[in-house]
Image (tube, rainbow, N blue to C red):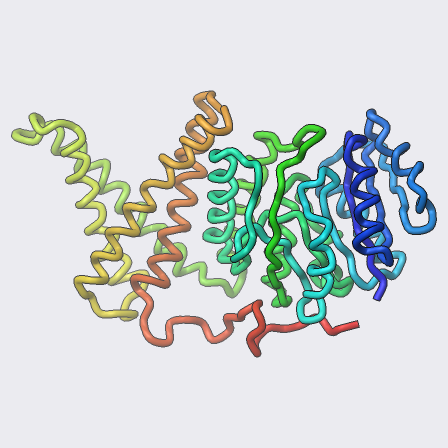
Length: 393
């Protein structure tokens, strides 16, 4: 089986030579394609100086820098055009352990996509600050909840694909340019029923060069995930009526929340209790409305009301409320996006949308899920009989 390792670069002069040397040691039979976006630091020159250049090390130079996704699409197109059986993608900065490339390729014996994962047993990260760990964990949780994915490390950039899997995913037709490109490929793979497996790795923060992460990259990922999910739930044949009813019930609860708060805040004796106490009453009233609306309309007849069901509903609803606060904290305090617009987008758009998605899926599967409520057409990408597979080559 022929293998190509695709490595995108921009200003990686200090690291690309070491990576090429390590790849020659660990996977000597694999070819390497460096996709360089006209790095001004001379990265391309280091690649040309490699002893294996033009034999097993190749260089694809692009005139413009248009994002990580664009670089990988160019590299994957090159791999497919040259008939490689397996394609590995990895960063040039030394954060992905070269010694785990054989493990990814070995996993392709039973999988269509192998993911180098930080978030499975024996996986992890090294030399990260606590807030970067939190941001990464929260980002993966966000993606998994909104898109309903099984893969733990949805943002992983260290992967191996069968060539047939790349074609099945439609990777050349993806539109993401930043780190959201990684999420999109995992999402597409699971939706097409491919066998996705995770291989534990230890991710190490770069020791040279500068990170390409930015606020714009984060915003792109948050927004695109919501757009993808919205298109799924509103597509013909989707459960759009259920979602619409759920959103209508949630809207009614919001109206009740605002109305009760403003009504009681102006009446005795509530006007002496303070806004926090009055808000708690308003939230409780809204919870009653949303519980009854979802039990009697959205998921009517799914389950019988029990004390445990009500308690679970209250806990999940409270967690859902916390997403707006959490998103505001990450945006304002961790990412440093301190404008009023950024605060409103993070709390009242992203946080509200994430909290709503969390409530929908948890209510559906944990609160109002009755016997046989799971669709017969659901599938498991981790090896069940219902999973469609890319044929081995």
